[in-house]
Amino acid sequence: MDGQGKKKAWKPKPHYMGKVKSFNRNKGYGFIEGDHDGEDYFFHMSQFVDDVPERGMVVDFILNTNKETGKQYCTNCLVVEYPPGRKQER
Image 1 (cartoon, one colour):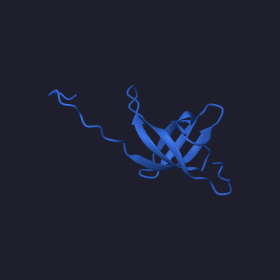
Image 2 (cartoon, helix red, strand yellow):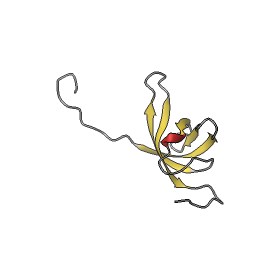
Image 3 (spheres, one colour):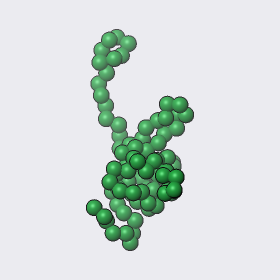
C-alpha cells in the first residue's frame, strides 16, 4: 500500500536479452553481457529455467537489485539461442 492507504498496482519487470559472457561451473555463477547496455550482470546457475548455462548462449532475463549492495543481478534466465555448433537438448 502507498502512503494514502491505496493498493499499489503490480507492474511486471521488463525482460532483457544478453549473452553468457562467462560461467564457472565449479562455483555455479557467471556473468551475462546485456544487449541493451553492454554491462555485465551476475547470475547464479539456479536462475536458468531450462538448461545449464554455457558461454555464448543468448538468454532472456529479468534484472533485480540486491537491497544490500545496490548491484543488479539476473533472474529467470531462459535460453533463446545456443552457441554455434551445439545441439539443442530440449
